[in-house]
Length: 235
Image (tube, rainbow, N blue to C red; front, side):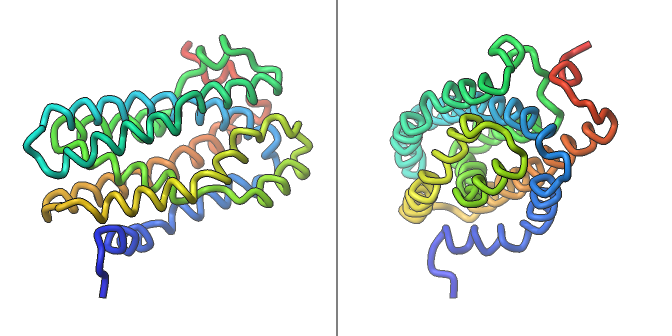
């Protein structure tokens, strides 16, 4: 018997995670991961930046609903989580710089379509459904942290500098704590069935979009084996 909102959500996520697991495995075991990883980090930077703006938008929307008992829990949680994630995009930018990619190149790189879908859909749900929907997005992103030993194995296999992995390793250390907070906060909410439905839809979309990010980067690399930042720039 599932006794909490987070238990129910995770049961749904487990039913839908197969494609994400397959796409992630294909990416991280790719024989040319050393060429793929810098472009992945650039796309991840886009996600981090977009995620911070998204959380601010969802928080501000929640603050416009002072009589909503769920929104009254969402707003302070997002305030806290924004502080926890603050400057992580700058950490990642520093890591990317150690690969010889400048901040200007990162800023000029075009997001792959799946990154736009990943973050963009959340604005619609937060603004036009309810800001609590962002919890589906956050729980999926925080709920699949890399393991430090896996990152170390990837570093050795790709022979990329350890400095390129600092932000990823920090998330490997911190995300388990964040997911515990997310689960506890979700369980404290007096959610309606409609809100539970949309949180799950947000999670399903996040699973699908993250899988698509991995798939699109692999497909782009297959089209252009000598992948460069310029291949992601607008023509």
